[in-house]
Length: 305
Image 1 (cartoon, helix red, strand yellow):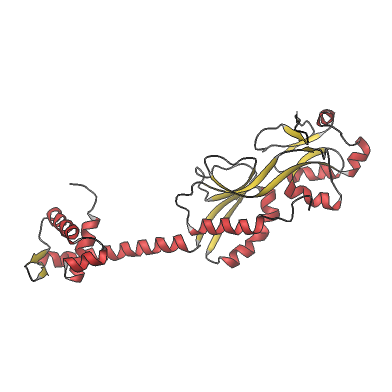
Image 2 (cartoon, helix red, strand yellow):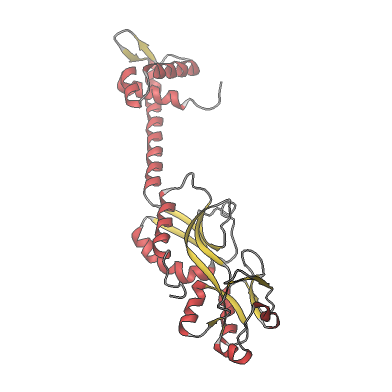
């Protein structure tokens, strides 16, 4: 005998006891009368006692059946409540979402959206994890992440929200003092600041308008785990650095920084909403995905504007 309780048998017994009829119970549960009859017979054999006295015209609980009916009915009601609650959670955006977001992007563009998100979905709460280090969504228990990448991890389900370009930048003071490089090879002798969490490698890959590619290994006095830490050195005119578009556009717009090598493009990636799986995506995850798609698909930080 299986150690697992016969939940199906208990449920069907409870419904027959409640309705007083195999046919009525079968109709309400959407199964055949023989299915219900077999389930009750199987339960009787398992429990070692008759649950019903049956005649051609009448069905009545035995004393043993009457003692079991209330408990079986409670199991049935609890199962209905569990299913109802689960269905409600899968339809209504509610509950906690653990969301991983890159630090600089999260502070600039995600945190300001949180008041609007909470007002729109008052039963939703977000555990916002801000870090430039790439987290393992599955191993670390995250529900979703926003990632800026060339290609998302193939093991994850990704929704592309918008393009994100990288820019090579320097201040006007730096350009005045050291000149404007005309080719990526000229960066070899210049102080180039680097970012530790580059998705692919520490190599800067440039692509010319004619398709020519050139790789440069940045070498300079500062390497950081957060791109915001590059800004003071750049504004002081001490170096050249790569900045993501969502950061660079602010400084390009007001002239504090200038884009270098305009005929050469750097990494052209995208902003992605990623989740571990699409098989069982509750309403709260879909709601968050749609929310970010609405507010981040045509961002104001695209450059040139």
